[in-house]
Length: 270
Picture 1: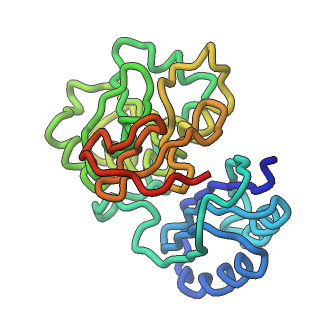
Picture 2: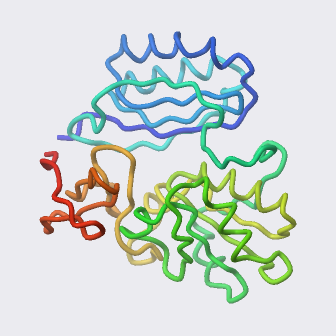
């Protein structure tokens, strides 16, 4: 039975005191038996964490006592054990790294598209659909018709945009990522570069597959996640993939070696 709750959440907000916030948050998570990673930066908070349902709700209630985090929203999944092995609360320059100074989602933001409206948007012929995730994430699954920038990290995204897109030619740009946070930064960056109509999938892939019936879904394949589940299917259940220790690509459960680099997988997680 699935008795561990996995929660993913983020919030862009001004946290000039983020360094002082670290220890109290770490102590709360440690005392309540939670594992995972919480990132804190002056621009906000980003986390995927697991633990008993009551502990997760307690953490969210604890964070919401801060008026700057009062409206934080989380996406939940269930797992039979923690997909993480340790607890980390880390201080960062950015909660998601794009590496371009002045890229501020609080200043510029794309049109937020609810999952129920996503299929209609990406079906339009004048919309270019871009997967903002890394190449190994794209490989496990993506939306039908999506462009793969073939990037190794999100920090490579601005360079790909500069070399491959043109705001005069690409009038409507729709983007998506796992949970929505990378699109926040990507849309702010593109708007600053002069792109006019920029759309982002609200809540990312995880919310889309949670709220969209399989028979109506435009999602193809599995969704890569950054924990020991490696990939989840349209039911948000672990697929049995393992992660290649050499190149980070996902290895399907019926394959003995990494399809990308040929390395053998580590012992599979139950």
